[in-house]
Image 1: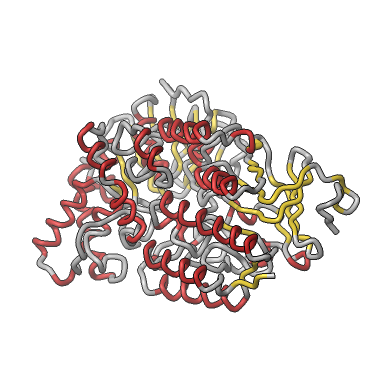
Image 2: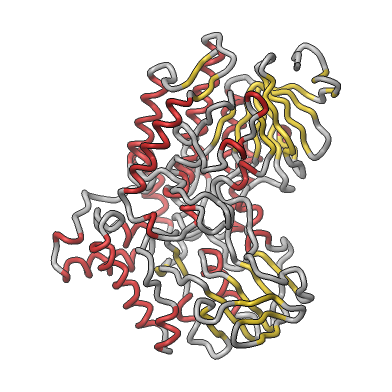
Length: 544
């Protein structure tokens, strides 16, 4: 039993007692710390990194940049912060985003309450004390009333399931864990395995440096030109002057990014009107420009086919070699049902003489060798292999921590058949265990900054409500969890998302339950539901 008045938990010596422990020092964890401080509560943030920034601390591969426009991908909670920070490009690079994160940490003096180079190894709920005991890799044994998991949705990298992966004797890199002092690939024979978002951003930059670049592609991706450019002073001033209304529109929007007007249906207009809308979306250089051009693209296969064929036609017009062009054209899943990508000269890169595409559906990789890799038809030798093979998304970073709730049940066991949450914010059997942008919330289907702020503010309000009304714990009821999971699943099944073997469905991790992980009901409607729950005294939660 933990007695917070004592300095022990069982036979162990407590090293500290806090009101709130926050896991992760990315944009969610930093804002959560700021909000907890405003409540006058004590908090400690733990992060395995050596600095703030979360995903933008780790993902430093060449070409890494955000795919949400920089003027949107920023905090809105402080008008002074909005006005003082100056973004330089339409889509900010990783170094600029990391500079922004460090600016925020310094501006609000967050670092004294953040412990870097520290992983949470185990968290267990003490039912008698109504508190969590947290054990860290640094040897800390900490008692906390609340735990906030701000671990990010794309934080646990994964390598491909290829035989011999440890036998390679050359240089190996992962896009998700790129060396912080950079990599010089000049004059080298480089293999890139994976053509998801990070691969699509990295490949043109690697090809500009390496002697040869061989890209091994299993699944081609729909990608659109980012149209990146420097921001001009006039547009920045206009946005800053209109931020209050713009931010509110973002909070009420479907994807967390305002779209002007009510979308028409693709099947209700002529082919000429459709193509004009798709061209406008293509030229706009935004994730929602083309996929959001019509309201039925993510719900009607017939409507989606018109958008998908538009993108394929663009790919064929860019890539010179007809067979390479066809290999780069996705044709077995709807556009938008895997994470759409934005690129800078990705498809044109395959017109270079020193770049080769290998379709591993046609000639699968057999194994990694000490000097390169073998496919079913060819032996390759490389000086470096780059793995751009993604993440165990949404749940990986949550279940990788040993979290024990009531009765010693672990989160990993509770989610063995797929995650079950209430609003993506809480799980039954885990009191005062708060999730930021968890599964079954809009999270990765939104501008993450909008969703992060909404979750952090909701959690902070809930903690304040407990304190002010004499409650010690809040716990999602099984009935509320089951109803929300059923609702989220039902909405997901009304879309085309389940038709793709994507990380949205957990399909990229062998053995992971194949369920639609995010919530597709829209950022605005979801926010309304969360507000209704809070206004009803946290309906669906048991308060003790």
